[in-house]
Length: 308
Image (cartoon, rainbow, N blue to C red; front, side, top):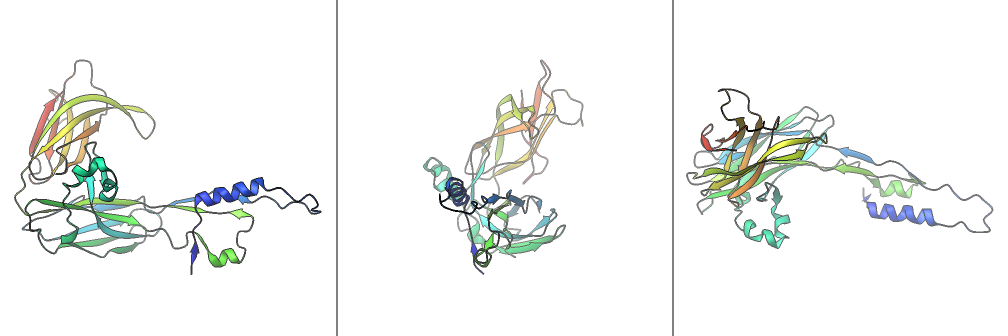
């Protein structure tokens, strides 16, 4: 069964044409009622996908891994599971390699991305999930890259729009929905995690610099304080860990006033900007201590520390 895809631009043109049409002067009958535009139906079919763990690393001792995806939403979904190359920028954004390839200013950074796609097999690649149900995705390292170093791609889980989205050709031919404009917007949702291959001993160190207090607007539209800093990486491996902010002299074991977990710096960049939301602004004259702790090769090890 073929389906007709009607673009928003075409809908706008059709509505405009109907609004500007003039009735024939000699027409004895009343002009037909204008087309009724029903509100669009917006369906976000996958905004509650959860994926664990948050990263996968292969090395000489590990060639197999399992990732669990869970549908935490209220409707059934179907997802595609693929490996996509992505590039980190110094502002912390991670963009698809295809996007970076179309921007010449990103070429030098993109050239440093070493893809893992050719070395990792995934099964299954398409999954249907009822609400509350999950599925294991198996990853297997088929071979190690010939060159030494770190290779990375991103395991990406993307929702597929339902088959009933849109209007069929038969429905249009049969006059379904006459005098009405109907369309449905299906939001495509995706989540991804890095998949890393290391065929040598990781070598990485970190440093913190350019600490400053800024303000940002949260989801509720409120202005909140944040601690901004530059997190630098040296060595041939990616950096991955957690940032915590505490007042200098705070009691041991006290809660931090700012936390950012799962912060990474990938090999294509030597530093990135990080912004850590704070539960409160620092008091006048109060110094803050920032700690970056490894959560990769040596979990819990302090890799960098600085004071503002």
